[in-house]
Amino acid sequence: MDVVVVKEHISEYPNPIYLKQGDRVSLGEMDDEFPNWIFVTTESGVQGWAPIQYIDKLACGSIGIMLHDYDAVELNTVVGEKLAALFELNSWYRVCRATGEVGWVPVHTVKRT
Image (cartoon, rainbow, N blue to C red; front, side, top):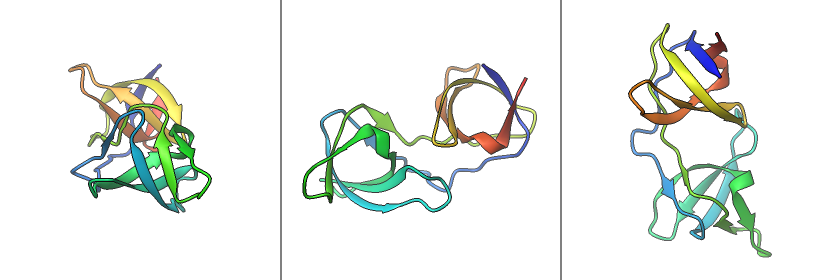
């Protein structure tokens, strides 16, 4: 699906987290603005937001195992930019630029063309 940026997005996280299937993460708070995103910390201390659907919570509730590879790369966008939306997850689109660069943008910042 093709989308066009209607509101600029600038990432607040210049150093995104990269997670692999099977990685153990400590689970923190849930995001208030975007439901189903949880703040996680890797065993090496790297922190970031991840979709709760990609995590298998262990019985203790404070640790999870990644079910899928995931990265939190957000694209900085400008109004009028055209992107290809690959899928939607928790009010964010995973998008691809014509250059092949892939990342996340909030759904509310784009519209279908």
